[in-house]
Amino acid sequence: MFQWYKKVVFENYANFNGRARRKEYWYFALANIIVSFVVGFICGLLSLPDAIMSAYSLVILIPSIAVAVRRMHDVNKSGWFVLIPIYNLILACTEGTIGDNRFGKDPKGKGESIDDIGTQQ
Image (cartoon, rainbow, N blue to C red):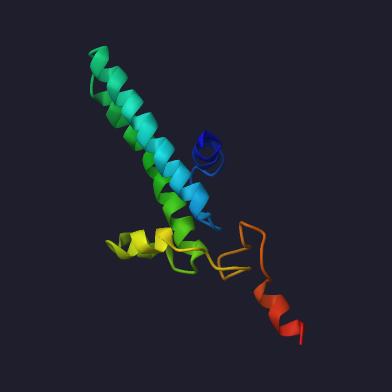
């Protein structure tokens, strides 16, 4: 689970291009909740300033938006769909497009590309 968190935060920090699998998106979300809870708990336990939690939230904001946009790309939707309440949650839970789509290759590596479909007749 935390390897997905590291992949989003360190490898794809501000990458808004490409696609993100459901696994990447939801494991990142779960790990982010756990890390946020731990940071908040430690800050409260040690009476540290709330600025530490705020700093963590600011640091994680861009990767969170980026992975959400890539998740929308996986279902062949524009990243702007992240802004539509409830529908974005439905899209985040929907299986991605099988094969390549206009946003890139299938992150699962399954299916055919759009270019291959027309040449197999």
